[in-house]
Image: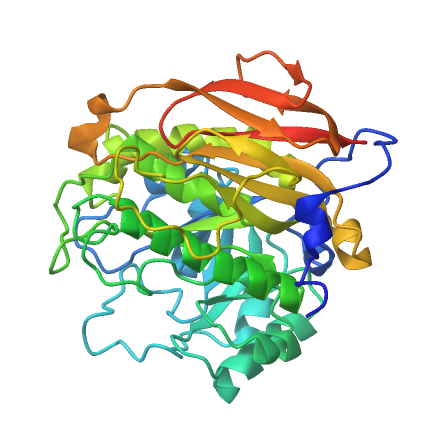
Length: 437
């Protein structure tokens, strides 16, 4: 717990040696190094219970074109993903002979379904360069069932480079014993389904706060248990019922926010839950598809390779994150900028996650390496035009010698002293590299 209780000295006054050399890219956290997959995970948790989804090579290419690097679904799709750059976590919860999954019907035995055994999977998929892991189950609760733990441990005991993956389990002790390295807490079912993705009403201020509070929980849990945090995001956007053909009111800013905000909290991957081309929004001309494609590329090419191997030690928020909303509540977990702190001043509606190298985190040095800066404004699809790009300003405290923008495609690298000024779209984000005094 001492590692988690990073001291006030970090926030109030940070002293550290100057950087000796440029960091290496693509070095994952220690807990992920035994496994084949070494990148920042951008995963689509695919639905196999929606009529009209065409599970073919075109479906696999849909994910590849949207810059996903992992699909989580039945082994039925593996031959198609092997023709793309997309890796696969094969779900052992469903038989790999099933093209579609009736999770709302008699086939459902969730949360510990078993369609294939670990032993059978090892024989079938050991030679595949596409398979990176196995979904062994899902558990919505605190205590990890012994059967689920046994399945996870069986995967880890293979020593094959494949990791066990569980959709939401908060039992840190149980997962550690079973060799589960990835913490995939869901961020949608933990809140009421009334304005956070599921009912298409958009994300009001309080829902963004709830989202960030759950990200904070994941940050602390992953740091405490030495796990990699891969939160599950609400890509489903369904209303009451299954919503096969519904449109979506997810604006591009909401998509950006739900992908970039977790990085401020130390995420080493993100999982879009409920991806299905049965929904028009996830077809190649869909609004959510286009927004996901663009932010996924930013993460895959620029942000992800750099934040690998880093831990978040807290996130600054400026209030309110809903400009003009004088009744907006303060995010419970927020660090607030002020004199003598790492960040002295921030414009309203900003968030800034403090990222440190894992070695510095483990040693207790907690030397800030990056800040993940995000514009916290979001709007539903029909309200996107009301939000425009804006110049934002952030001022670091005297412990920071200089700051450097890690540029996105088409941008120029920029160096700053203590004050950083950038133009950001709503919910867009950039990495700022720090040089400490």
